[in-house]
Image (cartoon, rainbow, N blue to C red; front, side, top):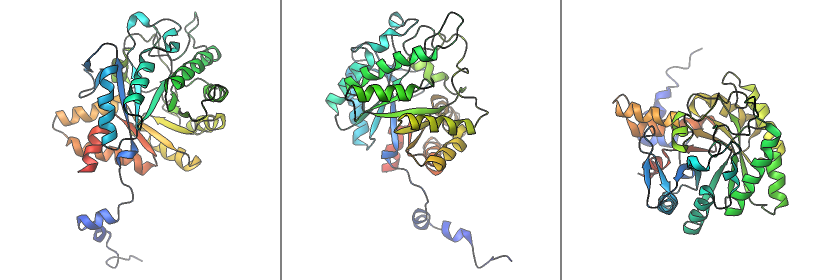
Length: 329
């Protein structure tokens, strides 16, 4: 039997005050993590052409951006280096340099803005001449176990520089356990691991590769270690393994095309679960707004709210500064 007109759902939408009162999810600046790209030089801001509104910043310019994020209530920034070509190699040794670009950036941010969290990427693609996340053999295959040794050393270098969260994004098997054991053995008990647990071999990463300087370097593709976009249950298995190995938090990447995976992971495990609104997603919003087919501010907030509705603890997004300003108005 119909309950109409006794129950009219529109009554709960009839005025701004009641819509606000009945909202099931809300955005807050503390839900956001701001990714930032770092480049060599002094006083530099290098716009990333394929990421409208996003720039690479020299180490001496990072502090002001981190301070801005902190003022807006953003709790954490994520740092990614654009390693000069001369420092890239087949085995990515620059990743282990305690004075490399990312380590200098960590120290600069923590010295200037100690109250903000710093998350760092653990993977070799910003450092290899072939653009892969791991070591490669003569046949072009990724050498999983040898790569673990390098990733572990990379994580230790970043932790020693002051990173609060190390985030292995490489998708090598066993890397979370290896990194956790190394952090414990070296006394980095308070350094968290945010595992890129469900990272898909996606078509949405192109502008990011421009930003870190790896576009055009990649030989082949990453399908042999990043996840198949066709698979959902596999993501649950990946998350379960990373948690068992010592991950404190997990991530689903990309974001909007994988909201079903995000919701499944959060429902299954109930652990801190993050989403990365990746560069291609950001670029589409900017392109839509520039073409006049969508209102930019509304697109930003609606997509971020979708992550919260799906169960995200937080979101890495290049729109973090804009979103925090909009939320505060």
